[in-house]
Length: 175
Image 1 (cartoon, rainbow, N blue to C red):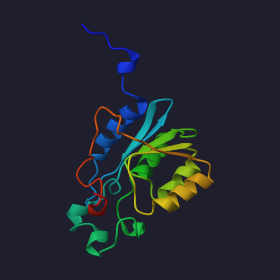
Image 2: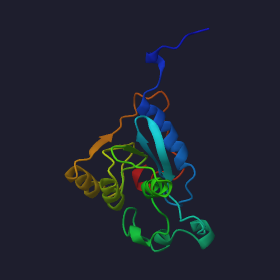
Image 3: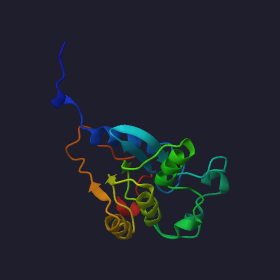
Image 4: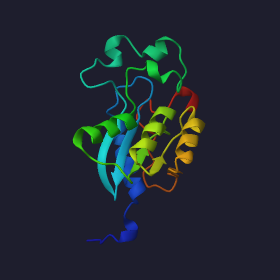
C-alpha cells in the first residue's frame, strides 16, 4: 500500500476548479454554461449555475434563447435574458438559507459580468477566483478593484486534470 503525502494532494483551487465545472453541467443556458461556488475557510457555502428562475420554462422550451434570436452579442443586453447568472443563483441560495457570505471567496468558471460584479461587491465577498474570461470583463474588473475585492485569474496549467468545460461554456468567438 502506498501512502500519499500532503504534497500528493491537489490544491484547494484545483479541488474547487473540478467542482465548479461539474456545477456548470447543470446549466440549461443555450449559449454558455457557467458554474459558481461560494467558499469560506475551504467550506462550500453555496453553488450556482446559470438558468431560468425555479419553475420557469427553460429556454429550449420557449423556442430558443431570446438574445440569440434577436442577434445580440454575448455580454450585451443581459436584462433581456430570462436566465439568472451562476453568481446570482449562488448568492440567492445563501440569502434563502440564511448563509452569510461576508469574507468569503467566490469561484466562477468565467469572469463575472458587471451586474454580478456589483452584487458580489455588496455581498461582502472579498476574493473572486476565475478560470475564464467574459466579454466586457474590463467593466467588471474595474468595479471589483474599486471596491477592494481581490481578483485572481487562476492558472490551471499546473493542475493535474485540465477541464475544457461543458459544451457551451465558451462562445464560438472565445474558442
